[in-house]
Length: 120
Image (cartoon, rainbow, N blue to C red; front, side, top):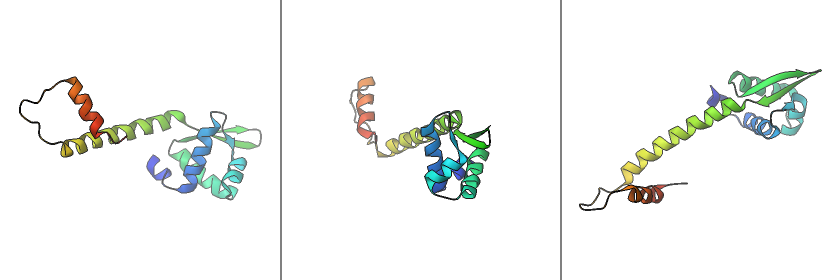
């Protein structure tokens, strides 16, 4: 569900603003001004982010303040890194030439081979 919530440009802008704002968050009205869309449009997009668990809310007097859910975002980043690491290993195996007979093996060679195939 998080991927669907992040598949829209306005939501990405809102989430970036909330991440930068930190745990204090930003009031909905201020978010609407910053992304230059109507308050009702911002409310719709924030509800989608909230439904995905990426944004939390709290009431502050007459305003609703939104903030990023850092634990959920961290979990999403870890998930994406695991996928990327697996894809990188599979891709490296497909590109790697077969080992030559008598070629030295060891941790140093593995490190060099990893550095050579890294797409960092």
